[in-house]
Length: 499
Image (tube, rainbow, N blue to C red):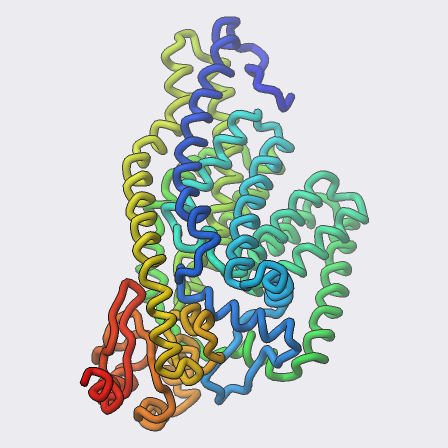
């Protein structure tokens, strides 16, 4: 099919003339909504304000990577690294150029997210989806991700970089899966993507299964390329970091709860429902379309991996990013198929208009919420910009060198070394890898001169076990509060400061 916006063969003359017009109107509306969803992430890029728990964590490891430090501490350490090393070197080097690895990481993440969107559009065009519908699908993907996990758009986190590398590998391969250079190049990008985040296996798995039906010779080229490159990456990493790399990335303690998978699926379903419903339409083309077979296979594998991953503590909506990408591929194919069938059979203009605008109308219904949420986020950004310098200065005045932060970016910007990792150390305690009674010596008021938490410590099982939170509450007292959380000092020091 031509990539131009032309009605399929057999469409009536009038329908042919109005189809591109209505389709581009619908696309323009959806693109406008998507642009609204990107306002706050773009506005947030240059400012030193905390955006997520992960930002400071990634920044510390990026600095350690480029400074030649050890990326994988032993199991008993109070800090941990459960990610492969590739992203830390890239963001660390870019951070030296930009002056701040957090701002560099945000830039990489936003560019990577937009790259994934462009890949979706280009893949759909490659598979016969007309321009307007492909662009509409890309915009709908942005809206879906904003509803699914706005906090990880433009945030210093390596996942979108990994998705960008892996989806780019898919696009390169798709242009000619029988070309040895393209197969090898695709394998290189996907292995590199897995060396950024190792759990993004649905796409490589789907490619492997799909190629077994397309061309067996190309499949062996693919497998050999992936195995050789993977072995080289693994050998180099083991040579640099030894067994601690395996312990940190593959054997990191993580509490597993099946109920979490069920609850997370329930939480993400509303955001994913529109593209999943459209994806279901592609099932009717499984026998006749290689693209539909691949997209639905990828979607099935992504859903399985997401459900398994979400059983682990700390895994959130980002486990479903592959589902959103795969669903968008299938949804774009379904839009083209449905619009073509309706246009070919339509005798009345209103039926054609309804079919073309229906997906856009669903997304238009989200517009008031999208605008409302972005206004709230921009207001919060303004408040954080005012509060953060004071919070950082407070930590510096009270011994930032011995600070422990739940929002690690605050510790990073205050000049504190990487002293404590609330989440990963909490997982060691909750799984029994480290006895929980170590909290008594860690938080007795002598080791950390200031502690930052998102909220005052309570007797609840949060990032740390409830026993640790009780110890913190016994030995520390809130001395400052802001939109960035509570800042605690040892009780005696807090009392002397208040006097």
